[in-house]
Image (tube, rainbow, N blue to C red):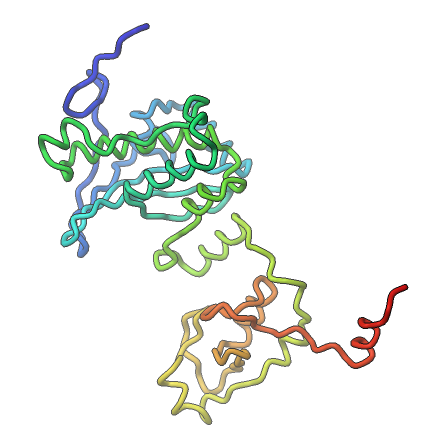
Length: 299
């Protein structure tokens, strides 16, 4: 077996370049963004360090187009006060891309859940292990050393690549699906959220809603209820625009209000309130003949 000589400090094979990160000072602390490699479209420096060449990059693109998942490690961020290290990732699935932020402890917790669910024999069968929590360099230079964190980011990229090869059907693995699809909605636009929902699917909320039932939602007069409305909700949470007196505003059974055009497009996709997740359009009450027929003996 060929021995690979590795650097004791950073655990990189001798002679291999450490991926570069651009340091950016933000309000939350110091952020390190991966410097993109122009040789591969959409690739990061971690691709080369993880052993991804042009052929693998092409396989990645084809995998995403076929409905598979791919995770790209974009960088990491060190908090100013808490000093927590957060890794910024981009998840790709079909035509959708969404950002997630994860700490190392969350990656370690994911691995523990996978081992618990699949059994310890899964490690022998090829389930990859995440990078170590502590290395010689982190002990010597501290857990916030830039070179140590850059190395961990690279090894996380390699870990995710191997993990998705071991578990290609993410939707059938509850722990991995939750890890990838629990997104930071505050960092996504409304259109991006709709693309994400269409890409990863949404649990069915029941039978389709009759358009006449949506049109029958009670109207809310902004001018009449201005005193009570301004203190509660003064904008439509779907389009993030103000509710004006001359607009068609409807109120749901839970009391939350929306533009009619906005809620009429939302309810067919999900019959829930965007604010409290309660039912938006209640199912019709069965009539007396229907009640009697449902209670009749079928035999």
